[in-house]
Amino acid sequence: RFPELPLSTMFKLLRILNKLYPSSRNEIQRYSTVRGLESVEALVRTVPETPEPIETRVCGQIPAWVNGSFLRNGPGKFEFGNDKYNHWFDGMALLHQFKIEAGVVSYRSRFLRSDSYNTNCEHNRIMVSEFGTLAMPDPCKNVFQRFLSRFEMPKATDNASVSFVKYKGDYYVSTETNFMRRVDPESLDTMDKVDWSKFIAVNGATAHPHYDPDGTTYNMGNSYGKQGSLYNIIRVPSEKGAAGETLEGAQVVCSIPAVDKMKPSYYHSFAMSENYVIFIEQPIKLDLLKILTAKVRGKGLSEGICWEPKQDTVFHVCNKHTGQLSSVKYHAKPLSTFHQINAFEQDGFLVMDLCCSDDGGHLGNFLIQNLRKSGEALDEMYNSLCRAFPRRFVLPLSVGPDTPTALNLNTLPDSSATAVKTGEGKVFCTHEDLHNSDLVDYGGLEFPQINYAHYNARKYRYFYGCGFRHLLGDSLLKVDIETKQLKVWKQPGLFPSEPVFVPAPGASEEDDGVILSVVLTPRQDKSTFLLVLDAVSFEELGRAEVPVNMPYGFHGYFHPSANTPTDLS
Image 1 (cartoon, rainbow, N blue to C red):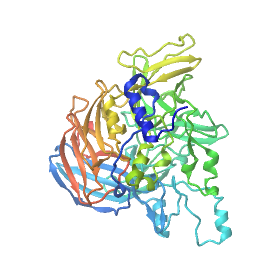
Image 2 (image 1 turned 180 degrees about the vertical axis):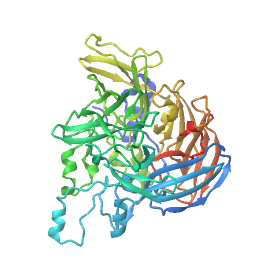
Image 3 (image 1 turned 90 degrees about the vertical axis):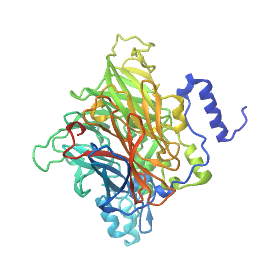
Image 4 (image 1 turned 45 degrees about the vertical axis):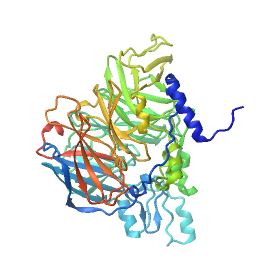
């Protein structure tokens, strides 16, 4: 019988085994044993908006060719009156704009005037339920009315706090419900409320669509009906048929039945190559019964999400032009993924890169009270989370009855990933790590970005992301896939946001451009700045200091000015 060991000691033993037996690295869940983390409570708090542009102080030099607006989205208000949100994802959307023209930068921010925001403001309390927060019955109603309100279906929120996206040339802010909001990227004004379900039979869509070079947009959304739960691949045309159009012309390309009709998988994004959409059915499950009864039970929707590690992850491959779903199902061990890096086709194989971890039970850990912890409680929270790392899977596209079993089908010379046919229509895949062991020291990698305009769905060499040696990103990383070497930007007490790559006009090299990231610090009041890095050397070119406080957000988008060269658009 083994002696009982403290959890921290067990983690240390796992790290030692990881180094002694690198071949078993894929089988070991990667946690941390960090101590002495500083509090980031100041980065997860309500801030006022800055609706009129203010000047920034530029240090260093921002290249003159960088002209446009760097747009950011994320939660910025975490309470109304005495009501407080529970989960980080619940905060009201605050939109940010860094306008860059000829090396000069101005800043403004505005709360998204969603119906949820306006209703909450009007009543000075939380009136609309969010991901982790249930709106309580109106105290002005009598006891019987409050009881009956428990049985009303909660309305979907239009608090689109995740990302900026584009459809038919227009900008929207998006979350994962059926509602988006069209916004003006110049003024940040809130415009139309757009409901996916008015155009296509889906109950929502991701905040991470993909784009073809001609502007055609692909996304995914669930639907629920007599056939059970379906994952739907959606295509939206690139141009408007008439002025004022939004999602007219959207169509379902393919519908994928869920393995478990009452427990479909949760997904935040998907992968796309030149000819295929890859949907990752991971064992993070939506328990529909719990979600439907959440209000009756007095629970938030997040209580209906569960991790089922006894189930495989399944990759579904669909031809995005014909809608033909491959009869081959590609299986992998249980994994959790939020963001894909890239996917491309090479010599009869579909290569898919993604950031993933070996434990998907972490969604509920991003409660605001956890992000505001300090001292040992903060260390314990961070060390309980499995880190995400970049991995590559290689899927053979030509698998048929005559394909041999028990043989690695991956013949790409530069990849150690495996793909083995285990039965008719079934291939089991193992991944290749897209990093060396030093990435562990930076807490893994998330918020991945590439040179999307020129290398999405193509073979590529570089990607960028945030290192997470904290609950929030605390470094910027550049990964060279060929050498698996890192370049790092990191400074004590600074927390950079998702890095967004902007290519230089006429660039001949993949990494010729700049990286934009908003950097925050909990150590000093009103010390936010926009960081500009040379994407090749990863050295700082300049920064634009903004005398405001800003919460840590999610995703960004660079909107080029009208006079910007076309290869930036």
